[in-house]
Length: 308
Image (cartoon, rainbow, N blue to C red; front, side, top):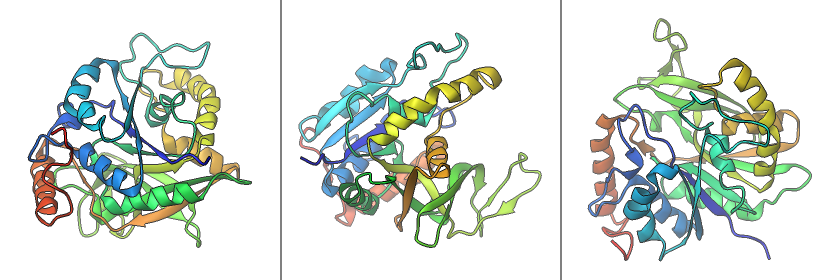
């Protein structure tokens, strides 16, 4: 029997620029947080299993504020991203404070996910369209001669904030809409058009507002977890030698390696929805207003879950 796609939500980050555990900061009328709306949209699209990737230190608060009200609605699982969850023979430097990035976050779910899955950030609002697109694609595209993966891209102009710079993966596609390259730009600011800097603002390069960017909404088959785990030692060998306290193992790093080797292809789907997120504390009022407008228009009920 074909497995339905699961949804992995990366919720282990503490949001250093925001100044708190932004995943638990309410934006709805009944203490709903951003990921409540993502899960509501995901369930409407067909997802029935949700895997939260959290830190052990936030488990009690996370379950009390978010998890328990969802457990009657979906199959909810919890896994833990820890800096010491490494392949045999490796250990994290004692001075390192944080885990090892988004690919390691996905790997935290390797013992509970055995089929296709989507993976998202906890603190980004993606909109209903993205979940429908990714669920339908994963349901219809098992691995064949190539690993079959997918990402939902957003128009850059729909993903920037008034309150500072953002990091985005700038996507390049083939003529038939498969990913050919993704380039991380860590400092993009809003403008007409938006622009990015690589030298702390001394020089700027414009990017068209229609540029497709990644918001970390990926869809994979189980093969991705196996490949990411197999490639983890090579990443660690380099990271421990060159940047042991800060290096991160990113999802796009694994994707780029597999596509570069001709072993995988990644279909790029587009969402016209506007992204909302709380990168900075000043972003929250805009998110609250947007959720209120979407609720008033009937896109969401005032109470998302029976347990609220």
